[in-house]
Length: 388
Image 1: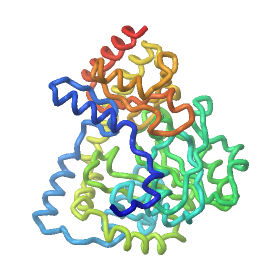
Image 2 (image 1 turned 135 degrees about the vertical axis):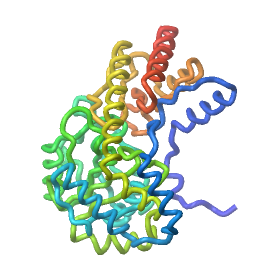
Image 3 (image 1 turned 90 degrees about the vertical axis):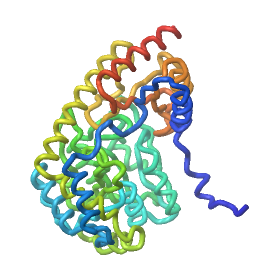
Image 4 (image 1 turned 180 degrees about the vertical axis):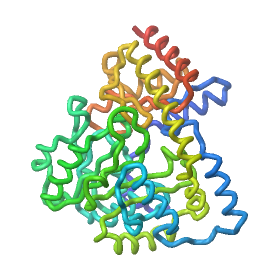
C-alpha cells in the first residue's frame, strides 16, 4: 500500500461522526432519533431558486462560467450588500466559489505560506484550521472564555503574534457559539492586525441569521478586509455548493489566478439558480424563516435554562446554542453518546470545535421544528433526572 501524505494525520475527524453513525444504526432499528447535531435546518431552497436551476438545465446553461463567477451573479451579490447593508462593493472584488469551503481554500493559498500560522479563537469551526494544514501552515488556537464572549482579547494580540503569524480569522455569527461580534471589536481587530502587518478574515457564512443586536457586514468598516459568505445557511442552498469571498482590490488578480487553477468555476447550475435567491419573493421567504428560527431559539434557550443548562454566551445568531454541561458530567462526549442511547437525541460535543476545556461543552442546533424541539427537551430532562 502506498503511504498517505503526512498532512492527512494532522486533520482530525469530526467527533460527532461517531454519534451520527450510532444514530443511523438506532434509526435503522426503528427508533425515532431527534437530530440537534446537524448544522442544516429543515428548509430547502426557495421555489424561485429551484425553478431557476431547472430552467438552467433545460436551457443547456451547464458549461463553465468565468472562474470568478457569473458576472450577473456578482452584480446581484454587490447589489445585496448595497440594498441590505448600505455598503458599496465592486463586483470585481467578489469571487464566487464552490461553497464557503472553496473560499477558505482560496484564502489559505492566497495569504498563508507554508510554516506560517493564523490566529483563531478556540472554539471555532474545525475545517477552517484544516485548510491551513493543506498549505503547510497551521492555526494558532487561542483559548477563549465565556467571560470574554469567546473572543480573542484585543490587548493580547501583540503577545500572541509572532514572526510566523500572518493573520487572524474570525467568524460572526459564530459556529458553535451563536455569538455575534460587534463593529467596535472587528474595527479594533482590524486596526491591530493591520498594524502588525497581517490580514483579517471575517467568516460571515451565517450573515442574515441575527436575532439580537445589529446585522451588519465587516465590509462596512474597510475595503482592506477579507469576507467569506455562503448560499448555504441564510439562503438554504446547502447541497448546491456555492459561496463567495470578497477580497481587497489589490488581491483580485492573484485570487482570480488561484480560482482558475483550483476550481475552473463554481457549479454553473447553482450560479444561475442563485440569481433568484435575491428576488423579492425569495428574500421575503428567507426573512420569514429567520423569524421561525428565532422562535425555535427562544424555545430551546428557555427549555435548557429550565434544566439549569444556560447558554454560555448570548445565542444572538446562526442556529446554535453552546452549553456548559460540566455541572452534570465531566465528559461531554460520553454524555452525548449516553443521551443518544437512552433518549435518542443527537447533539454535538465541544471536542469538535477546539481543545480548551472542550469536554465541558455541547452544541445544540435548533434545526428542526418546535414540536420536535419540545420532544427533545422532554427527553433530555428525563435523561438528566434519571442520572441525578
